[in-house]
Every structure is written in C-alpha cells, then in structure tokens.
Image (cartoon, rainbow, N blue to C red; front, side, top):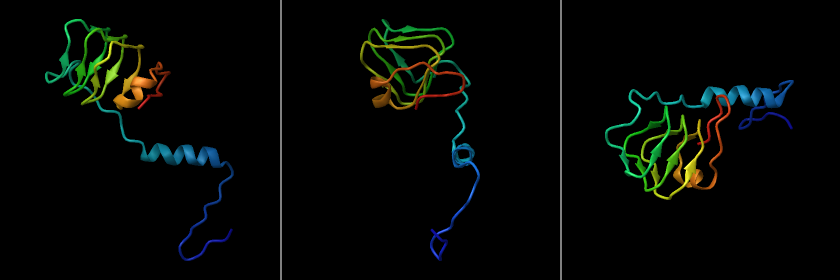
Length: 111
C-alpha cells in the first residue's frame, strides 16, 4: 500500500499502542457533578440509592430500582424497571445499561 493524493499512511512500531494513544486524545472528559443528585432528577420512593451515587439532570429512577454505591447516572437516563445496578458503574446509555450492568474497574466506564 502506498500513499497517494487522497490517502496518508502512518507507520508505527506498535499499532495497538498508537491507536490507544490516539483514542485518548479524542475521548471526551468525564462530567464533574457539583451535587450528588440533580434537583430535576425524579426518584421513586421505593428506589434504593447507594452511598456516593451521582444522578444527573432529568434522570428518572423508577420503582424498586437499586443503585449500588458509587453508581453514576449521566443526564436524561430513564431507569424504569426494577433492576439492580452494581456499584461503581457509570451509565450514559439507558438501552445499553438495561442489558449490560457490569461494575466499573479502575477508570474504565461503561457508556
């Protein structure tokens, strides 16, 4: 494969490492929560919220939902089912989190 007018080629010793470093540049920063539970969040009275949870603006936490310690809900999530979300989990996409609810390890977040 050769470079031409519409194609550039970048050669590196370790393609996996180079791609990881490149992706870090384009990864958006994690939002900083100024308060634990945003005033526009709606939380059902039967929901159980763990210690150190952050619940973003316009989130809905439904009946019998359990949030483990340290769960982060990014704005506009709608958790309507009676499900348990493990501790130290960051959720951004309600469709994904309804299927995959895995604990966060170190700085890896599920979004």
